[in-house]
Image (cartoon, rainbow, N blue to C red; front, top):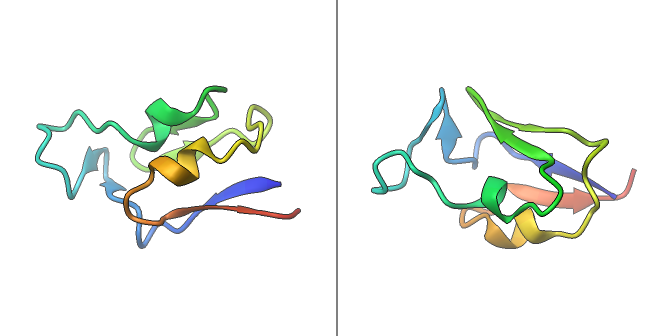
Length: 71
């Protein structure tokens, strides 16, 4: 299993959250990942080699932008 991100749905664009009123301190998929496989840059990046396919990021994404798929 591998995670994928639908960047059209993802709220993290150009290095900031476009939907939160949290002052730029988003608490979502990146913080939920116990393996540190997600990182916020201009977009959320995935390190598939660190991903343990636990689905924590999928559950944490309020926008339905992240999914697990068979590879």
